[in-house]
Length: 287
Image 1: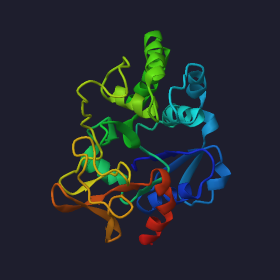
Image 2 (image 1 turned 90 degrees about the vertical axis):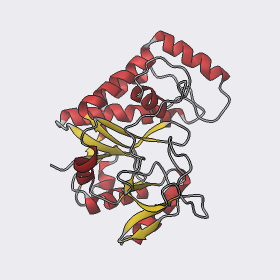
Image 3 (image 1 turned 120 degrees about the vertical axis):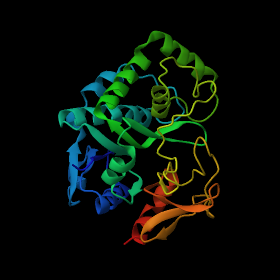
């Protein structure tokens, strides 16, 4: 059975279509959950799902959400509730396990084969960052673990002590960003329910990390502009854009790893932020 690749995105963007088309080159079970089904129905092979059918938990959570970030309240809330929406979809369709990723990613391999050969013993896998955070930009989830995460989010925001602590913390916070879905993923992955700041003391490492190098052969990209991960924050060769210096070998992306002195294959590339502008360029390179 092909592992579902689930992508969540509201509204139409050309780069989302490119994301789907690239994933379909190597995978058969590609699913987009969106609010504009008709805009993407022309992509042969993709399953396009109306998100409105799976918003029960998201609607319930909205009354508990408090915005503690300098970023857009709408976007930050959406980034959190998408996990609930995806879980409801998985539960309703008896999906036991899925690869969940952002909509600005290009996939260059069969995720089912990668999962069966290297990842299948993990109920959850996330990406780590040089700033010692965790990200769900590319992630593996069992349905059980995703349900636990959805429940965790509710607990995190409905616990009165946590709410008060977060509010007081944000009053003193004077940097860009704040509490977001990555904060929740970070606390959940470390089994910590009490808010203590954006990072925990001692900066623990979540070992089920997709950005590690597997068998000195391949890895997953946190995002193009990230020079490393939690354990090795500066390990990739970069180009003039300060992105990873990607080269293509047999239509697969590689980057030179300075730590092990070897070109490493990337299962996917993540075009976060302004790098979305280059998605079509990279997509065409493998045509």
